[in-house]
Structures are given as structure tokens and as C-alpha cells.
Amino acid sequence: MTGGTTLRIDREKLWNMIAEMGEIGKGAAGRTRLALSWEDLEARRLLARWMEDLGLDVQTDAYANIWGVRAGRDAKARPVVVGSHIDTVRDAGMFDGVMGVLSGLAAVRAMNEAKVETERPVAVISFTDEEGGRFLSGGLAGSRALAGLTDIETLKTKRSPEGKSWVDALNESGFVGNGRLEPHAYLEYHIEQGPALADENIQIGVVRGVVGISWLRVTFRGEANHAGAFPMNRRHDAGLAAARAVVELNRLALELGQGAVITPGQLNQHPNLPNIVPGEVVLTVDIRQFDPVSLEHGVNRLKEVVRTAGEQEGVAVKVETLVQTARAAFSEEMVSLVERKARELGYSTKRMSSGAGHDAQILHGLCPTGMIFVPSKDGRSHCPEEFTSQEDMGNGADVLLQCVLELTGPFESAD
Ligand code: HGY
Ligand code: MN
Ligand code: MN
Image 1: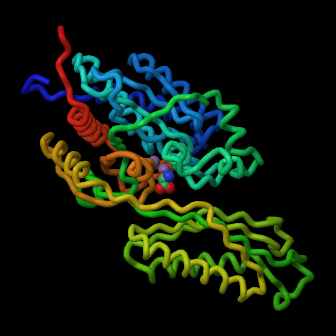
Image 2 (image 1 turned 30 degrees about the vertical axis):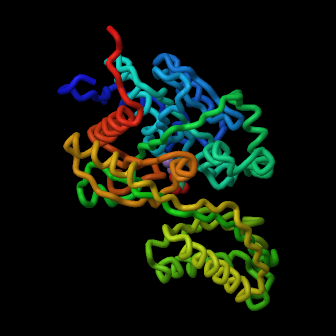
């Protein structure tokens, strides 16, 4: 680029695109676009149209990851990849994942309008099933598949509550292709989803790395009995055992310290009727820590806690590991690139780790990877109240654009 003018993204247009995508799956509270659901596919179709409108070559792979490629001078060079995901949790906000994917398109638009020609191609990607909640895949399924960390056989075993398998939903999606993406570098721009930046009024989070995550499924099997006629002192109440476990797991997280977080997020009680002592409870537990040794210790302690809770009620306990996701510590090269570009644009910065999981922690195993955060209002996310201001949204997208230009080597076009 010629000196002087700093390329910027069109903030108004990006904001409107985020809002438009936020209408897909809209419900009484937030929006819901669970992985490979009708709503997710509708959002994918809109994304593909936007990619085509920008002249990108739209591709998908065997796991329905979808990306658009902007050509570079060196057609054989591996692309600089930016992106995130557009599937959501239930009753979600409109920024988680989506802001990163659409900011990639905004960066492409700015490069197109300025007729910037780059050495390397640029790809904007949306990964399949980042959230993992519908099929209990553990999340990051599309990026894991790209990195060879999961496969069709494993995903065949993942089923939604309504009994549909991940692979059936994939095959019905219409987004299976034979594309193959080999990234030169990967950058993920995302809302922080916690309170650190908002509390300190910092504009850009320079992400050092992403936390390690374990998802476990705990099944408490007691005895269903009559709620009225069966005496309290002879019950084997799976509901009570699970309730004890939930209280003790909270205590365990506080005892482990070092940033440990434990979340019994999903609890299904059976038969789940007012006049039956619960015979069975299935609880999912999400435990996260940055240090791998501490995480392993935390998982072992977690298993002790749930088994003790079962023993106290004479209830059998089965513990299954649904997924383990290694932490990622990004290279100093990528961390300082994000920091330098943010400061050149005049933004305040803070180096930090991510407590939320991201596809970047998987891509980190494939290529130099970095992340950019902007503040979440009141630290809220994974809820309809999730909000990031247009100004903050634009700041991070501008940092993303500058990082891409550096990573891919820009040239003014001939004319
Ligand atoms: O669970 C997570 O941290 C991410 O939002 N999937
Ligand atoms: Mn999320
Ligand atoms: Mn996300």
C-alpha cells in the first residue's frame, strides 16, 4: 500500500451484516442455530451468497467447513486464513463467531475496493459445529476434522437428543465438498465473552492462548419409586445424588483455583415427572484450565466428587469423557503481530488468555495462529444479552485487516 492512507473496513456495512445474520434462527430470546440445523444451513446459504458477491471462490470440504478464497499473485501459495463459526448455542447473542467470519469478509471488501493485490491468497472460513452442544461432539468438530483430530467414524457415534447422527446431518446439509484447505497462517477475531477488557476499559485483547477443555458425561443410576408411598430412608434418589454432585463440583472449582472453572451445564432427569423419585440423571460437566497438569488433576478430582455423591445415596455412577481439547499457547510472532498492529492503530491493548474455546486452538497445531479480542459488554456471552459496540467491533476488524495485509504481503494493483 502507498504510505499515509491506512486501509479501514466499512463499519456500518459490517454491523448491518451481523444484524442480518442475527435474524436467522431468531426466537423469543436471542437466536438459535445449532450445528447443521435448518437455521445453521440458512445462515450458511447467506454467507455463501455474501462470499460470491465479493468475488470469492467458495469451497467446502468433507466436513462442510465452508470458505471463500480471494486470489493472490501466487496462486500456489498457501492462503492466509481468517474466520470463526456461525453456528450458535441456544438463545445466543449475535456476535459469538459470526463477528469473526463477517469481519473477514469486511477485510476482503476493503481490499477489493482499494484494489489491493496480495502475494498470498486470503481465505475466509466458517468451521462446522464449533459449539458442540447439539450432538455433544465436544465442539470444534469442523476444525478438528481439518486438523485430522476427528473423523467420520467418530462423528457417526455423536447423536442429537432427537436421535440424528452428526454424519446424517452432514450428509443432508448440502455443504459437503471435496475442497482441501492448507493454511499458511490463521487469525481468529472474536468477542472476549468474559469481563476482563470491559472491566479495564481496554480496546483490544491480544490473545496469548486458549484454555484446555474437558467435557464429561456423568450418569447417576438409582431407583425410580413412588413419590408418595416409598419411604425417604430407603430411596436411591439419582436426583439427590446429582444435586449433591453439582454443589460439590462448584466447591471443587474454588478449591482448585488457578483459574479452574467447572460447569455442570446440562442435566437431564428421568422419568422427570412430579410423582416419581428420579431413577436416572445424566449430567454433562465442562472443566477448563490453562495448565495441562492442573486440568488432568482437576478431572481426576471431579471423578472422585461425583462417585462420592453417588455412594452417599447408594446410586451407581458412570463417568464418560466426551472430549478433551488441548490448550494452545500462540507463538510470540503472532501475538506480537496483533499487539503491534493494534497499537499502530492507536488502540489500548492487553495480553490475555481465552477461557472460551476457539477453532484457533485447533488451527494452532497446523500453522502460526493468533487471536484478536474486543470487549463483551458486562462480560456477557452465550446469552441474548451478549453485546459488543459498533466501535469495538470496528476496532478489532481494522486490526484483523492490518494483520492480514502484513501476513500476505500487499501490492498495489497495476492500474
Ligand atoms: O465453549 C466454548 O468455549 C465455545 O463457545 N464453543
Ligand atoms: Mn460460543
Ligand atoms: Mn465462538
